[in-house]
Length: 314
Ligand SMILES: C[S@@+](CC[C@H](N)C(=O)[O-])C[C@H]1O[C@@H](n2cnc3c(N)ncnc32)[C@H](O)[C@@H]1O
Image 1 (cartoon, rainbow, N blue to C red):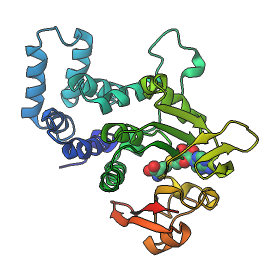
Image 2 (cartoon, helix red, strand yellow; image 1 turned 135 degrees about the vertical axis):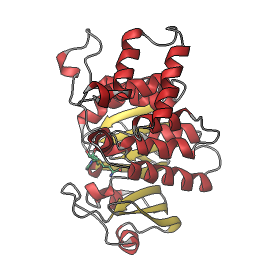
Image 3 (spheres, protein in one colour; image 1 turned 180 degrees about the vertical axis):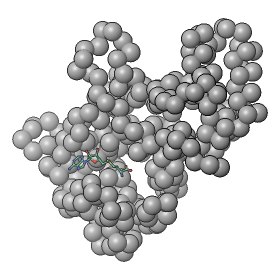
């Protein structure tokens, strides 16, 4: 299919396709959506229009429905700029039962002044969804979840993400495992703001905790208990997940106590300026992150680079 401007901008719809097609008993609605919007299939556009018509004004508000028809017929209505928030809102309303889409909707809301009571300070520019929901990103996250499933019987316990970023993986963990709690540590305060909106329910239920911090400054006070330099409060951890290894040096790993259970991903994408610590191959990854017992080591080829994953005990 010809790659138009829309397909280029919304390639992350294919990342979501990876997610939905991997789901057991997945609904066909996503397939209809992606065929209609991404592949410009007119029969599927018809199906969505039919859905709007049959809802008889009960399910969707008129101005929303008008906006979605604009997206579906954009080429014929001379609409060049379709904003991601409209595509996300369309998709979420079309498949409201899907919790990942609710998270995506909350992610978008966190970046929009949807509620007049919000202060100007709460509006931060929305990052490109394609950076974290691309096909390669989604495949790597599903890879991690599927491999973890093979080794975990029961609860994951207290999970701590190092460099947790926008943390859509946390949602995949909640969906696939029993989890005591998930803490997501990142240097970037903007990610924290967003996570507060995305995981508002889980934060209220003490299942999720976003934390600003430098993981290289974590001090382990016991084998399963850590704190940040200069602070007294300590926190427990049963599993450390770091899928951002290429963005930081090895200090965080060197500091982990022996016996810590770790799942990590790194890659050989040296051309990305933000990657300060890539690995040449899986052997390089094994020597940078030595484990006393390796449960899994493997390579996933994505379009631009290879991703390496290690799961095991330091
Ligand atoms: C851009 S993301 C990329 C993630 C990775 N490629 C993935 O797919 O999950 C890297 C994140 O690591 C965070 N980060 C880098 N160094 C860090 C550190 N020392 N402590 C905490 N977070 C860090 C950055 O702020 C950023 O949010």
